[in-house]
Every structure is written in C-alpha cells, then in structure tokens.
View (cartoon, rainbow, N blue to C red):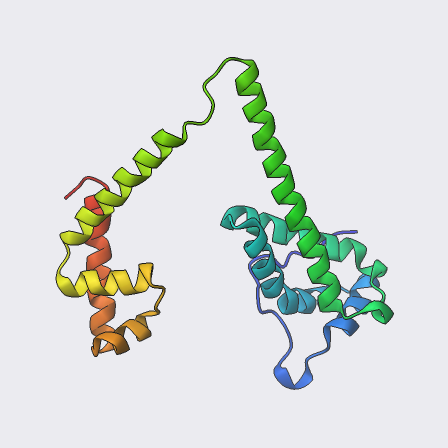
Length: 199
C-alpha cells in the first residue's frame, strides 16, 4: 500500500466547523482513505513531534522518528481499537515507544563504539578536553557579544538566552517591535561575522 506524500504539509485539515475527530479519521485510514490520512496527519503531527523531541532531544533525529511514527500509523491503523482509548492516545503511545527505542539504540551504539575503542587500544572519550573546548567556545561567544552595542546585546541575550520572543523583547525594553527586529538582525550579523573569524 502506498503511503500518501504529506511531508511538508503540517496543519493540513478541514476548517474548524467541519473538523472530523481523530478517532473517526483513524478508522477511515484503516480502510486506506488517503484524504483521511492527510487530515489525521495535520491533527497529530505536531503533538507527535513535540513528544518525540522531548524524548530524543536531537532535532534531526526527532524529525526522522516523527516520520517513522506517521508511516507506522498509516500501516497499522487497523490495529487501533476505539474501545481501548482515543486515537491521539494510541498515536502518542506509538510515538513514545518509537522515541524510546531510538534513544536506547543510540545509547547502545555509543556503548559499542566505546567498547571497540577500548579493545583497539584507542583513548576513550576525553571529558577534560571537551570541557576545556566548551569553556573556550563560551569565552569566544562572550567576547563577540561584548562587541555588540548595548541594545543589540540586550536584544540577543533576551531572545536567545532567556527565550523571549521578539515581541516580548520589545515590551521588556519598551521599544517598537521594528526597532528590536532591526537591532537583532544587525546584532546577529555581527555575531556571525565575529564567530566566523571575519570581524
């Protein structure tokens, strides 16, 4: 059975007024209904990705696992039993299992590599070196931040270190949103140049 190509189409679905419940959509998907799969994809892809990202952490791997879960959803929709719970719960259970499997697999691969390195007489992971390198990188970023204007530094710090949106940064600094966006763009350009060794 061919899986419908719905990648790159998040949020695909009916208007709010005539939205079909995920349970009903999943039953239709079990019968091979591609349109129902597209709608179900739009309903569950966000929650699935969010759950997977919390478990796996890595963005690229989270995207891969999410696609694997949605492929599994297409293939195994017939196994869904509405009497045992909601479609979303069932889908999120699939996602959680697949995410945990990915983490375990990555951990096992890392342990295998470490055992192989020990067997081959190669030096194991050097944590001291990693910590020194991380410290040097932080110092480099700090120096580059110091090259920004005060407003650029404040804006970048609030947005990228404290997690505020541009609008929230503008409110905190009592500035127009456009000014903050301009300062942010200029600051990020200067940071990029500095970190790239151009400045």
